[in-house]
Length: 220
Image 1 (cartoon, rainbow, N blue to C red):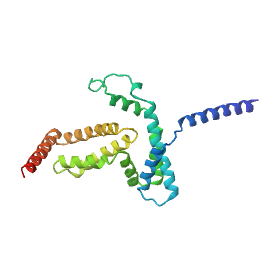
Image 2: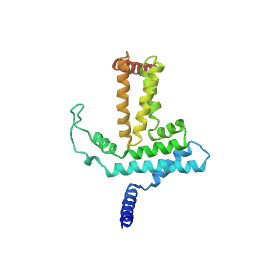
Image 3: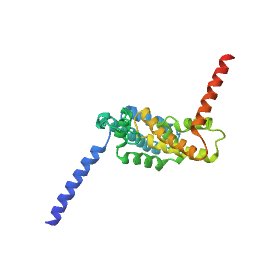
Image 4: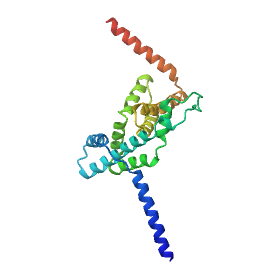
């Protein structure tokens, strides 16, 4: 009798689990599959089995991010204030809040799937595809603004920008991705201020220099 009841319980549990898995499965659209294939092909792995696994991993992640974004619009987050500054939440802030509630398993599945078949350098190349190379672009900006930027400063800012990149891949729009980078850029500028630099002054000096260079070119 107990064995029969146990079988029934297990069957019900299995059915519930199957329903949950189906509910979590997303359909990879043509756009996501095309983008995923282009990104993986750019690595030139010359290994069909790895390539197929990775295309599926990236495609599933892209589809999951899109699906969550489309089913969790701004309207799902009530209007309110940012507790850090008391200002009203913008639509962008509210969308980021909605998208940030996506299950963490989506991100973990992407990173674990990439690291299963790729080196850390190759993983970084794929994350760069998601974020259109914002790490290198932003770093070049800091190196132009900060006079004689030290190796220690470079390493610390690089670390922050790489954190921004990995977090940003879970967001759908470039506006959201840029906003995630802004969080870590603020931390980078605070780091510089805390270690003997004056970010506001350096930025002011840099903009004046650029304006002067443009003015000089016009006079040529």
